Length: 111
Length: 115
Image 1 (tube, rainbow over the protein chains, first blue to last red):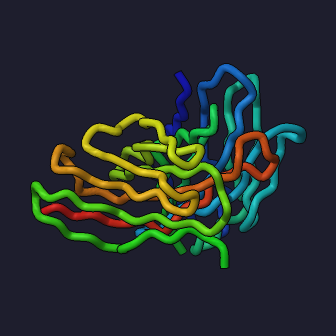
Image 2: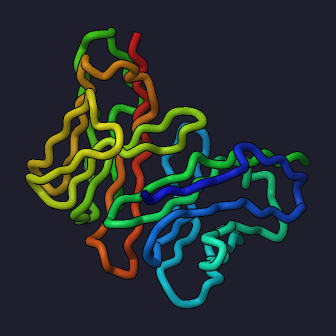
């Protein structure tokens, strides 16, 4: 069965520090992979997506993610976190035109 | 501006009453989705529709019903059979599968509270 695992429920970083959010997926074929961000009480905004080609994808707000087929991972990174990045982050895989989400990682940023 | 509109943003209902959540999109997308979000559980798929007059159950369809009479609209009814309906509900839409720009666009959500 297709699934997405985000092992970190809550991460706290200092402003200016680097960030890596982990995502592992289970899917038989080459997946479509996504990272979304959600502010409290709001909908989801797409940060970046991977369909094929270059395994390092750039997104909005300075985020990037790397697809590693051998590790079934699609980790999200940012070199320097800003206080406005505090939010919940969701990784998703899209088999057969359905988005399957991980349980999310809540990011807290301290000044 | 193109987008997805969910209404209302907040909804209160008494236990045992059916309630319908609205979702409208003007993106000309074929596919539409309903997700339920609970703390610590991420987003779970309730129903999805890939074309007008057709829809499929997701992972947690029990106690919910949908219709897709128009391309633009995909209303969700939370029935009295749903045992724990209090949650945040998100509607999404996406272009046809296979297009390079395939991604889901989300509405701002409806928070339903049943008392």
